Length: 505
Image 1 (cartoon, rainbow, N blue to C red):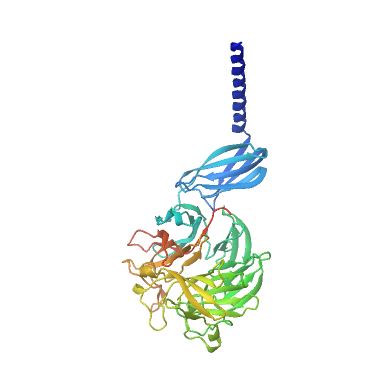
Image 2: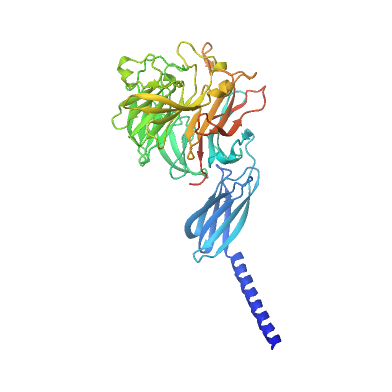
C-alpha cells in the first residue's frame, strides 16, 4: 500500500516537473523576431524591430557601468514594435534586456548585445568630480559641444553625457546655435538645406537622429536662440529688415509661417553706445537669448552688446522693463529702467541665456559673462569673472534685487568673455555652463577681440559645466571640465549651452 502511494506521489511530481519545464520552455522559446539597427546619425542609439506571436508590451533595460541602468516601459500592447534604444556606450559591447509581457500576463525576456564604434577622434575626455553624488539632479547633460583645431576651424559635436562624464548620445551633423528639447521628446536644431550656407532652417529630429520635419524656414536668419511656447509656436531670434541680429519673429507651429515680428530698433535705442563692443560695427544689440513667460504672455531677450535684458509684452509689442546699467539711455527709455536695491547688487555685462523661473513670478536667472563691467573703467581680464546670477523683479515698484549668484568666487579661472548658459533644474539646483573659457598658451585669461588688428585673438578655449545648489553660498555637487591637454596647441573645446534632459520622454 505504501509502495503504491509513493509511486502515485512520484508520478504526480514528474507530471508537475514536466508541466513546469514545458511552461518554461514555452516562455523561453516564445516566437519573437528581433532586428537591431544602430543608427547612422546617432551612433549610440539603435532601432529594435520586434515581431511577437501574441500581443505584448515591451520594457527595456540598458545596462549602465555605474549602477545607472536606463529602464523604460513602453505602454502599448502590439505584435509589431519599433523600440528606440538610447544611452549606449561608445566602443563597447552593450547589454540590453528586453522584457515582454503578454496580454494574458505571461512574461519572458531576451538579451541583446549591441557593439558600438569608438567616438570620433576629436572628442575630448571629460574630467569629472562628483562632489555630492546624492544631490545631483537626474538626467543627461546635453552639450552644444564644439571642437577647435590648431587653425581655429570649428566642428560641431552635439553630445549628451551622464554624470560620470560618459558619452551616451551624440549626433553627427552641424547644428548651428539651436538645440532645444521639444515637448514630444524630439530635438529642435538649426540647420540648412543641402548645398546651402544659410542656416535658416529649424529642423525637428528624433533621438535616433532622423529628421522628422522642417519646423520653420526663417528668411531673415536664425541667430543664437529659440523659445518654445506652450501652444507650440516658436519665438526665434532673427534680424530686423536691413539690420543686424536685432529682431524676433514668432513662427506658427503648424504652418511654419511667420505670424508676428518685433524690430528692436523701435523698442530700444540703436544709437546707445555698445558695451561690450563687437568687431561687426552694425551689431549694436546682438540678441543672443530668449525665454517665454506664460504667466503674462511676455518674453525676455538678452542683448549682449547693450548689456541689457528686456521684457516685452507679446501681444502689444510694448516694452515692460529693461534690466541693465543706467548709462547712456535716452530720456524716453528711463522710465523702463529697473532700479537696483540691496547691498550685494551688481549689474550683468555681455550676458547670455535669460531664463524665467518656472514657478516664482518675477524671478530671472541670467548668465553674466562680465565683459569689462564698465563703460569707462574696464576691469582687466585677470581680475574679472563670469557668473550665473538670479534677480527678483518687482514690476510695480520697478525695482530689482540680486538674490543669488555663483561664479564670482572663481575669479578669472572661469572667466568666459563669450557664450555661456545657466538653467534651473527640476530638483532646485542650477546647471551653469562656463562654456568659453579663453586662455593664452601660457595660461593667462584673454578677451576675444584684438580691436587694433580688427580680428579675433588666437586663444586656447575650454569649458566647465557645474551643477550647484540654490543655497547662498551655492554648493557644487558636480563639476565637469572639458579641455585639450596639449598646452602648446591651440586645439580646444567650447560648449555654447548645456541643459539637462532625460533621454526618454
